[in-house]
Length: 234
Image (cartoon, helix red, strand yellow):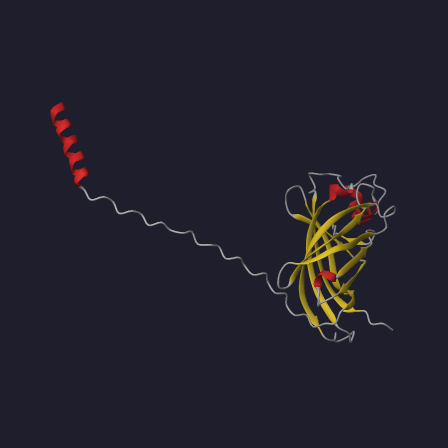
């Protein structure tokens, strides 16, 4: 058996030696990735100036995750905002906003008193607004945002970074803002108008609001919708 195996091995080596050499593999050059051109912002035709939020056509909502399940919403009823808008150079735009933490809606259909025996608060809204565990509106009657930079990020979008002051603590927060539309003349206000949507996230623990973390989520999602009408000098 050994001579047969040896003979077979020699035969295979001989065939390999007589076989034509494999053609060299052509070198391929990896395609050079094309750099995407920066999107050109859409042309905005409303004039520059101060645009003030229309509170009857705007909403401002904070959302946190509840016990790892769905998100629980807190909607602020009283707020104002002004956009010092420069359509020719979006980076020059300034944003300021202020809201009242004492005036909010969460929707709590259950019996608050029965579910919170011994509480000094009359409703869940009252508790969230005025408890020192939450917004403590008595000591901190306003939540404010003042932009520090506006950076165009797409054809209809920009990143607006600013200082958020909540419960006496100031931290930077970035909002992703989308230009929703414009009117040369609002049908009722008879002045130029523009619409924006914005979203962002911040950690409530950064502002001293760490009560019930992590059972109630630390990340607060911000959702803003608003019509803004140009403030016309009287």
